[in-house]
Length: 175
Image 1 (cartoon, rainbow, N blue to C red):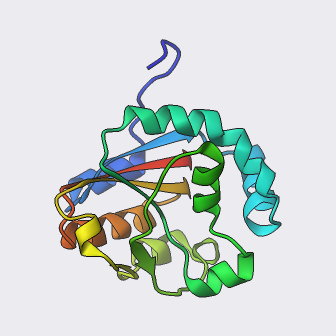
Image 2: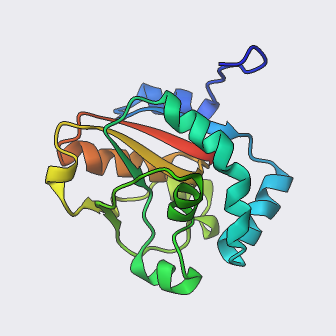
């Protein structure tokens, strides 16, 4: 860790630590702010794929610091992929040259951005593991673009642990 960086445990993470928690830790490359929101809107919703390259160096750096056997991008539903034309997290990993496996799947749900904080926190499981042999007894690194309430990452970690993963960490571009 560079001398100017500091470890900050956010209020959401502190709340997650109080309950049953299958996620070991989330590492965020950057703090989410209005500028980040604009960038991610251009990337995710307007298809400006080249923007993902801006995050490659920091993503590679943080990825290299985490012990893992398998890297898994947080999936989007087939309906959302058809709507957007791509999975934004897979795009981030591809442009950063980070190898990943696709074994986690997601059922279609309403967009998380359309839900209130309370609705997000009360979500039921919508992830499932397609190939359990790919993750059995392995240390998993989940990667996503934005950590908001942590619900999505935690549900994914729960599904992976139930399927036999040894441990689950996550890495996000923004928090």
